[in-house]
Image 1 (cartoon, rainbow, N blue to C red):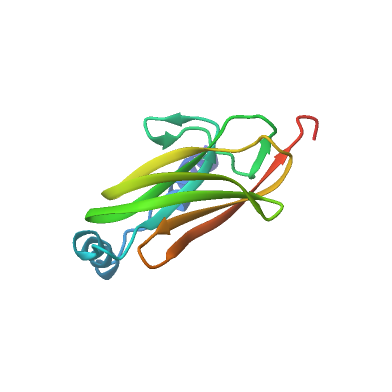
Image 2: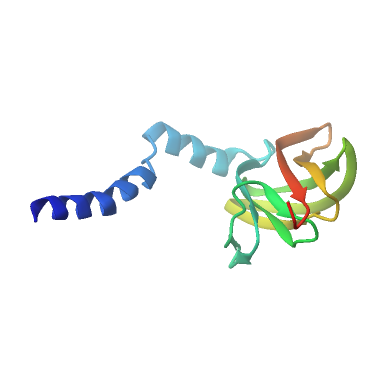
Length: 156
């Protein structure tokens, strides 16, 4: 009986411990808060992104973990940014296939610890795609991340 109780405890607790968020150090927390309150003009920070089937209340509801989408399927690129308070950032997404830009989406994000937004990713052509998340500034464009996904036929 003790072995079953121990096994049950481990099955429940081990995943919780593995996925528990590690507490940031004092310096890590200070750095983020200082950037949020005093980082005006230094640009947005991309904190996270996911490809999703659905968005619910500004969150990715059904993540596409393997990066494979079916041709014609509605897919969202969900993004989470840190933007210094009082700032606005001009952003654009650049979707490329076969090293050619196929779609560009412009959007603006504003000061927030957690600015979440999403855009529809093209899935109209089979093949490998690259999306760049870019912030436009007066003197240069800053690529905040380059991510890949693949569009496959429904029979693949």
